[in-house]
Length: 311
Image (cartoon, rainbow, N blue to C red; front, side, top):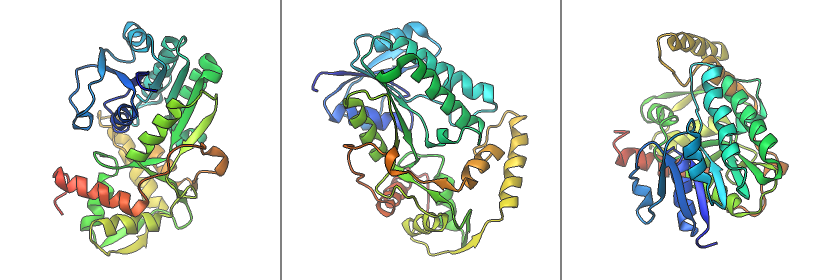
């Protein structure tokens, strides 16, 4: 495998930068698409080749994919003001990458477990449509990976959860019955890199830690608090209140703000089953290094070192 070339989009994102590191550690040469020449502490022992451009630049995508053994398409939007904005990146961007990768033996699309439920939100619908667009063009040369909820160092989306766990004497429990599969970002990257090295399958796989049945919300909040050295009390969060917060945040979109907790995100949070079934998992991928407790502790330690959390 030494010397094989992996071309990566979304290389400077939360998961993408870890994927680049995992590929480098596995002996790949790495070429990335980026608007600027990135400097990343994770890449101390790796100097990826940089193709200047973005997903709207067909010439840059062509240069990115030229001569590659595998393309990993990890670029995407996780929040946007409208379905059209999501589709411009998560669907049309995926289609452009597929077009550029037509002569590449293997392409890996990093999607999302939410693509299982496209009716839940504009985000989940766009990820599902992006999968379909790439599959129609690449067929058996495409492998789709659907990470479950990813967390870890430099994650801004779950930071408010840990901040609340560190400060609040009372933490909300969104649901007493829902299950949420989780994965540390380093484990998600290792599994993605392993699937990139495998033969293309035309299949879709979910990425998760060694608890594919998932975690309850009470356990998630308890482990977040434990990682912060706290032992708070818990209370059910009224679903009507959560929905009201989401609807209220919808109106901020009109002011040009794109909050994470919109009504669409609330529907995703309240979905009862984000567990991973046995048939969704890929055989032969690395076992997770982090269980939830170790992963949350690792994440909080990074937040504190980076001064993202003071407590």
